[in-house]
Length: 458
Ligand code: TTP
Ligand code: MG
Ligand code: MG
Image 1: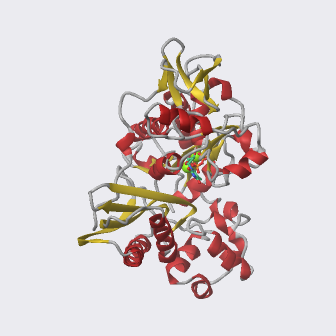
Image 2: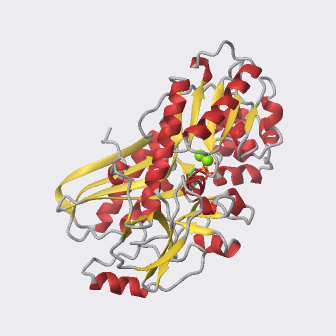
Image 3: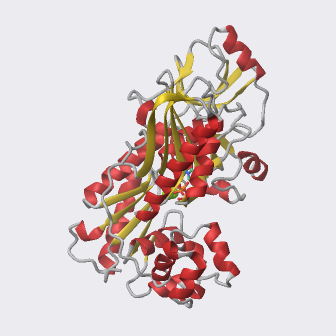
């Protein structure tokens, strides 16, 4: 713990949804839900307007639709999130050489290296207020919440305290008073399992936890977690801000002499790799929410599949279970020459999550529509039937009308709203799906291959 509140944590507010509202003026101030729009889709995030109805990240889209039927339900536009993230991270790196991104929308910044005249509360507060404005300007209006504190732990807690659009400084010396009434789940690494274990021992708040001595805590939650919990309950956190340019991910993979065809064997290998990955995560005090498998088929096609947990994990059992589940979706009957498992904390997985499923083409207003015709049209057009050709929220371009986004599609018709970040709310038009003047729009720079492959084996 430092003597001054020189650790800054910044997290963008309702990140994906805010980018959508920025780029779709008609949705500003309205409930917006971003995520998988198909039958089994999951909410990635919701605008604060939608959160008022109880819509939350990781909730099923079905549940979200029933809680807030009038929200706009949009598929993700990863290129736009990546671009906004790059802008923010670049700005932060101008502030300090020590910037540690935790995900696309979140980073620690070490103000000890920001060249400030001093690190008094008034100085860092004014500096952070200015930084918040610079983020909004640079991103075309995205808001961020900033926390300042004497450690990473405290800065992160602070940034979450008054979200959205907030700046919270925890003055040095007040950390423990702040934490005491909070639930133990505020402590990094305390997920539902640990929280439940503690609850059963009568420990619910940080104050309760503080009263437990180290030996007892080790007995309750084990060696690996106990020591850290004991320290964090007292706000003791000396973890440095580490500049990270690459995605923090840990992986293990193997290439095989002869193509594997036996599923049981493959599952066994994935389980072993999951064990290696989880052990390395634990050794370095890391955890991640995204489990990815990499499978190279006999013909050298390489497939990545990932899934995301609501809470970070470093557990062998969890990583192994998810890795095996991901394998079940793949056709490996032709043989497999490489298998790998990776866990990452960064948000790069989201692409797969949102775009990987075959989405239904519900209207953005939430009214589900049949989309039989789309398949037929596409087949007739000689195109491989892709049900998600026009997914709600997706960018499109029309020869005369210019750029817009898909409001909904179904029954052979696609409805588009023509507006962009720089226009007022725009007009709505409907077209036949095979309208030649209308096409999906992509930014000039290809972002398809942005998703980093898993690390090479260590
Ligand atoms: P968060 O920073 O956790 O959430 P948020 O920015 O949407 O909202 P806020 O910070 O204001 O509470 O996550 C950043 C983005 O990561 C989020 O916009 C979408 C994505 N994400 C998922 O795809 N799945 C998830 O379960 C979560 C939590 C986030
Ligand atoms: Mg956020
Ligand atoms: Mg975040």
